[in-house]
Length: 68
Ligand SMILES: [Fe+2]
Image (cartoon, rainbow, N blue to C red; front, side, top):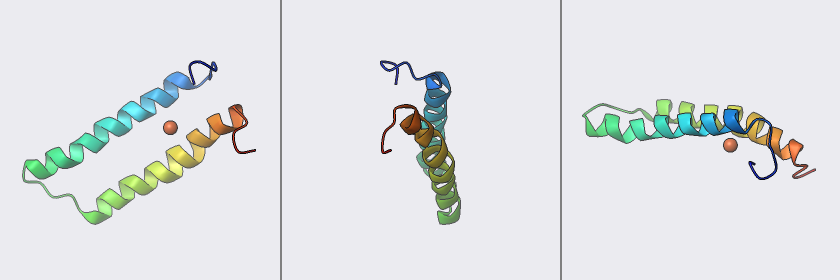
């Protein structure tokens, strides 16, 4: 993305940093004795899929004419 001058690179990278910070919280929560329900994990993954991959990743795919 950087190499190709993607205009929304900073925003995209920030979304991935946020994803990483959220993902590492799941095992921490379990390790600390908390519960992570299947429903909450599925909601998290579904939200990432429908929001990030289907919108933001598609945006750079269109910018680079990938898959068109
Ligand atoms: Fe992405």
